Image 1 (cartoon, helix red, strand yellow):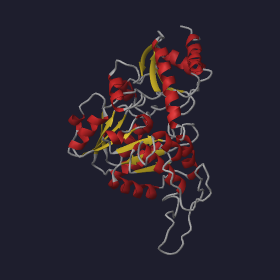
Image 2: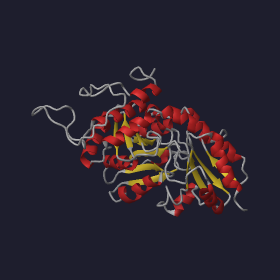
Image 3: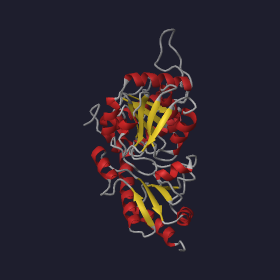
Image 4: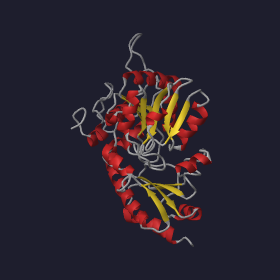
Length: 387
């Protein structure tokens, strides 16, 4: 049994079993409160909801669920993952320094390089899975920002070790937990202060809405973020909040099936002579595997692979018949993504190449389809290439 007496899967379905006092319908699906404003009983009294930019009952419910799943005291739901990170960066001030992983989602890199830098925040981009983070701490360093596994090269950072460095130097440890979700990994339990999610991905799980989350175990950070979300107005809309609530209900089932498919695909790719490298933490014999095994309960459904030529990469993207060539991840559909023109198109070429993101690299998000159909589709695409 976990928090509130419920196990993880039960909390995904029922949340905390609390409902707004006004909801007396007994609706199994949590209601969508599609209202911008709420009536006050009298001056000085409130129902707890005043205006949906500040809070909305449907958004409040999805926030409670995500906070419970991550083990935080509060979660805040934003209109997208990037909206969440953008708001989070507002807790820093000009002159502050952040140690950030070198291999991050391209949108995060774009934000840090173009918006945060303009606002006077500086970054040291480091391979956090390999480097001694302590060596990069400066007098003005305020935080460490990591993804683990990273997007797209699947590097795995030891969260406990990063947390030890952060605590020694009074830094915040921020972990983007999108790839593994709270089902497989709980960074707050490992020492992180803040968890970030693109809720669009595994939490929503159906490629039908955008969302982002900030989760924390600190009341001080919660208070700061509550002030920011009402001020900048990037909170998640009621209908989108409901879609995320619906998606979370099946999170454990989807994560298990997608992970099984990813493992099968990774092993199949290893047998193909055209495939030069497969990056997946579920494969034994790597540093990523050992660290992930020590801090997570699974390896997820994201994998990246490098083929022998750019022409083959383009051929595979064009010739799969079942698997869509699309930019995103974490849904029930398996997707193939080409990082150099999609997720990391705005990242300078020299940075991409250092991280290993070449024109031969493909990223795959395994879905919940039949394993044989996915492998069969990849096989026909590979076999159709004229070498």
